[in-house]
Amino acid sequence: MASKLRGHSRPAPRLRVMKRPFLPGSSSLLARRPVLRPLLTLLGVVAGLASSAAAQDAAALVGPVTRAQLRQPPYASWFERNYADGAPDPSVAASLAPKLAGISIEAYFGTWCGDSRRQIPRLARLLDEAHAPENTLTLIGLSDRTGEFKQSPGRPEAARLVHRTPTLIVLREGREIGRIVETPAASLGADLLAILDGKGKAPKYPAEAWVHRLFSEKPSAEAIRTLATADDQVKSLGETDSLSHYAEHDLLKNGRPREAVALLELYLRLYPDSAHGHVLMAEAFRDLGRAEDSANWARKALSLDKANARARKLLEQ
Image (cartoon, rainbow, N blue to C red; front, side):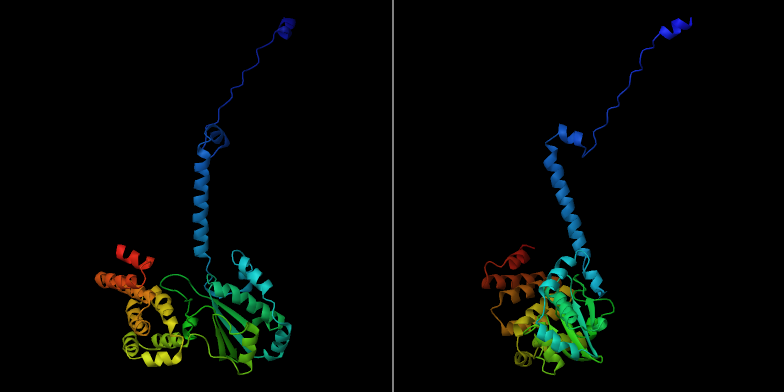
């Protein structure tokens, strides 16, 4: 009996192979459906672009900023490059070194701003080469969002009347002795030396600065009345062509179309053939809800510049 049992062989159990379901994105599905490869690749690219755009939108540093933050992605790509390329003249750095006692610099800038991306790393390199105390430089990031453009929490830039990025404000014992607006006249080192020696040049965009102070310190209605008769005063300051930039970026972008209309009226009295000025006026009236006036200004812009895409878009709207 035992021998029979030993001699008896049971059939080997059959293994059941479970077929894996085809999951979207699986290699099996791609192998069987090669036509889906381009579609899935396209979807991946679109998703990547959306993610990148969202990250870029969220990337603007606002408020107090440290160098350590600028040395991290995504800022490091431009900070490190411009820091390395921004080696100052050794003689300028050596001349600065003994003059930095009691000096502080407030840098108002935008991580989204091309001029800021160039100048802030170079300023950091200059101060390092001059062996400036670690707390010499204070960095304040400004927003790029509509409605709070070039603003930061607590509005320190408003107290300093900042209207361009970057603006580098040089202080001695807490009192402003000069500023560099947007770009230096010669170089950061040479301009900073001149300021410390009491020979600094007047900041750029004086007419724009006057308008900014007017809107910052006066009630809106009073500022608008002042602009109606300010042509000669503005012309005496110079660089009046930048007033359209202020109307677009500081007024319209921050939801102040009434003030923009008042400034653009002055601007167009000085530059009556400016198609750009007419387009901005059309956009201001659009924001005021005055569609017919907006269309009229857009038509005037097209009469001056038949290829003006912004004017055409306004008329299509």
